[in-house]
Figure 1 (cartoon, rainbow, N blue to C red):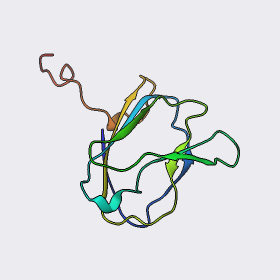
Figure 2: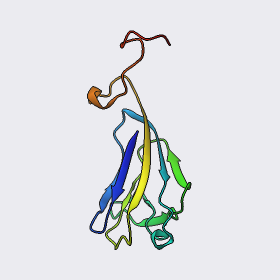
Figure 3: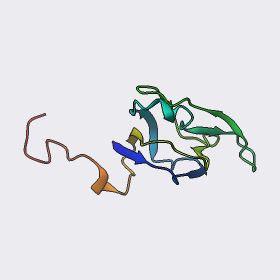
Length: 113
């Protein structure tokens, strides 16, 4: 789980998530109505990565996708009027290499499941 706080100047080029991310859920958490146009952008699978849609930014709204060959997304360069807060939840395969980013299992901590 990632907690993101983006401010004016943030942008993210069109990209596909890596294959070890099996499921991605992004939830918007800011209540500021000035962020209405600060949603995640969805692009087509052409070399130009044309904008297909933007997910409107509103508290408790978001998107879910399974990363794949055509799951292009990002955030085009544009003003962010306020603090764009979101939660990103990724379900990853056992091949995930950044194990320091994973929650520690209770069984590894000596706890009871």
